[in-house]
Length: 239
Image (tube, rainbow, N blue to C red; front, side, top):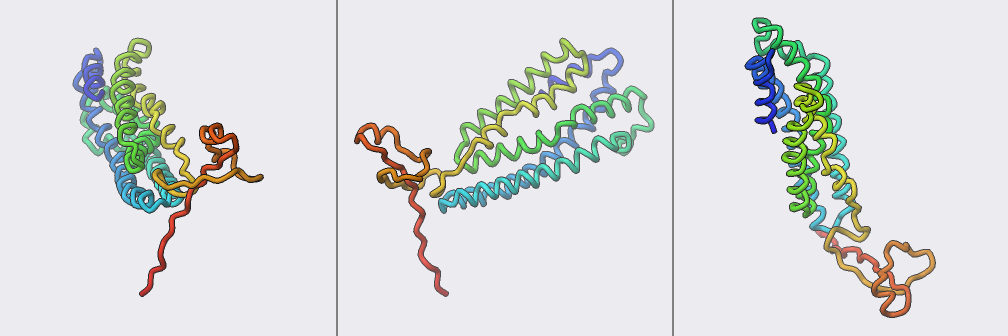
């Protein structure tokens, strides 16, 4: 979708190569923010996988939550810098000697492209978290929806209504609608462990959690049967 963006910007009557030059300043700064999210996600990924392997789903979910908070904080800090000081950042790349079109478009691109950077960073971290949870296929499919269907689609469609600004809107809108956050938010660890923990069945007792009822087995035997996760048994470590 970056290629599509550059084509639209280059063909704008009053921008041309100035618009492309301005865009090349914006995208590396986007990569910096995403790199921080990837760093946090990769660091958490291994710990989540280990926790799930030990059937400690609660610990894994807490780790993901902590990593998401760190991603949000870091992306908010970078977004604040990008949105508050776009002119100064552009000036670092020699904007003082360039056309006013270059400077004006660069500042506008900063404030539009990067206004949803927090979602872009969280989405990138979610992509890694979903892989660590054993949902590689879902993670890849949802990422392709964001990059291809949303990223390219909005870059082609939004300019029909908003002109050149539609190209700038395509990235934040795609980040806002990325479905990976929904998939990660729907993950509820089972109380007895991770995704592959063992269970035992017993008769339902008053006060039991109705969500753990095994309805298919209950219908078969004619009584309410509970599917109860078994807590993993660990031996004591002696030194």
